[in-house]
Length: 243
Image (cartoon, rainbow, N blue to C red):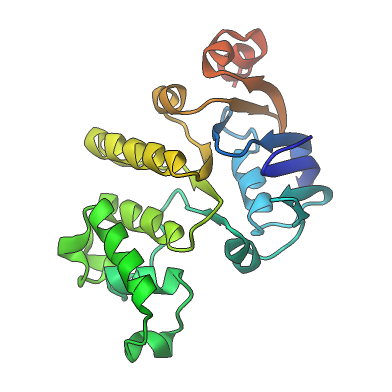
């Protein structure tokens, strides 16, 4: 199995509950891959295992040609694998600009002494412009709206020039205008060479944006392919209608 990211036979139990069961799939270089499934199908657990927030009981994960099973999130981030969360995770007491600096790897002392390199300042400025955050760059993240925090988190993961970005419910809790904005940013970044794996409940968003889609049920893939085929697949329909 070839791909920028490959997941081979991963399994995870929580007590007597098997959340992920012999899960195997690949994410191709340059794709916008959707990871979908009914509630309880194992999507979040898979995400957390791949990004190092959970340890798998079984199986292996490879990224960019290297085995990364069990690596911690910081190591994966430095290797080019980054993620967002359903509830945006930012540093509320830091400014928007400082959040981007932290994402670039700067320490607290460097922030306070303003020792941020020119290239990183230019990159942060470009991202602030791209995500329409220039006017709030000096505000603390706690002062931002929910939608602005989602945009800041997305901008922050791009500070490291990632190869793969894993987005966890990017449209959760945001208005239709911001959904269109997020979609545009994702498409633009894909065109620039970034690969995406997206967990999302908004099926219209997934069907517009993602190809292929991977459908999970009971912790393992039951379908991988084009979104229009997923919509007509009997096993996928049964998984959703039966949930």
